[in-house]
Length: 536
Image 1 (cartoon, helix red, strand yellow):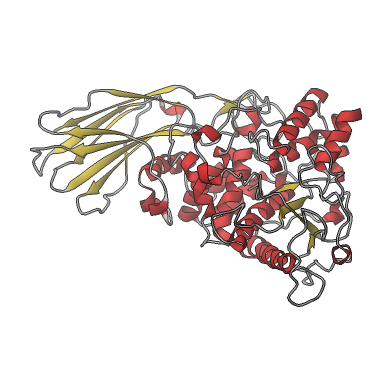
Image 2 (tube, rainbow, N blue to C red; image 1 turned 90 degrees about the horizontal axis):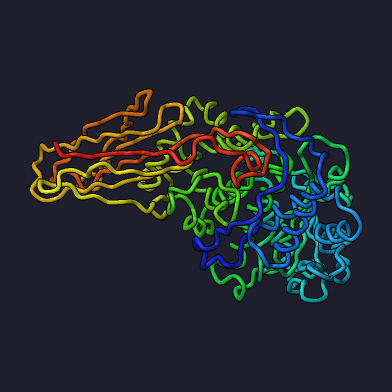
């Protein structure tokens, strides 16, 4: 919901567009061939111009290569390198709806004055523990409906929005214990004190909402990555623009998603897109469990396309990674995501790990090995209902299926080529004339152990129950085998999940690829995984 795309009913693989890689430097703590990241204030004019071009395309509705939140984020952190007309264009894109001129691509711009009650801060929370202000206009296309049941000068929808934002603030920062977002007191251009600002605009034909940062530290020699921000939400979530769920439900999940971007800004505004958007989509279901709007993105996630790397930073697929975060939080509790963001913390004194390193260390803090957890996730892609809450509503990964029987007693050697953080689940079904005592011998020839191969096997019994998850022990050269009961009266299917769990990168911050650490180059791509299954 930074991009909370309007194409929500037709999300498909076509939507995962090949686009400009993200542009921001971030800090790395552990991987291969690591060079120090550039300081935040060291931005180049060419990359700033590129950030401007991407933001203009996204905000004008011509591209969904990035979400509005991330396109504006990139632009804000590069704005200081722009001059003249480019600088003015950037300032217009980054302006709040009440500050925009309304010309050009100012899609959210009110183009008129703020409502008197809004200027008088009558849309602000009375609870100091949730310092939120809702801003609106009463004039023009961006005005919310003027229904005002209690006749206090504040439209009903403004009061509903404030109530949901207060609930979201409390849940995300008190129940889940994430850091509070920075308010205007931090150094925003709209310095209205200790408040976090939310603006209502008629943006529903393109987006659910977005957040941006106009923190004055963007233009200063400030080497840390925490930022203040503001959010823009739709002014009514009308059923004409949002035909699924009620207006309030669409507001709820958007509030949870976009507010979490402001929380992320307070840790590290420059983090990898898949880490930011996936976590924001994940938290929707934590704060408002009954809406389930984020399920639309699973169709473009690894739960449908397991051989695509988990950490791609481009297109709508970044939202689909929330399924992986659900897998982690179901296995370890929500604190694992909290610890990951605490490790990603790029503020003064923070560890400043980048996404994968932060996640690895968060999982390690739970006493688990990250490679093993990723290997198990490969099986979860094939059988999500066994590993994930409401997993029976998740799509299952596209897999190859083999039938083994007396006539066709071997799959012969089969090969899969896997990039980093990708998986190949395979299903084997018992054929005719098998005896109850028959077994299958599965042999795996994977890359060497230094390439982080994983292999898992599990049987689904004929009554629908699941056998134990078993690891195929792979030796130093990546070879291993396992024998599994396969009698056709007791087994419905057997799943073999092969996984390339490598998280090794070089040349981080190079923007060479669309993957983690701002375009680092994965070390373990195009790895060959062979297997053969034979009836014994």
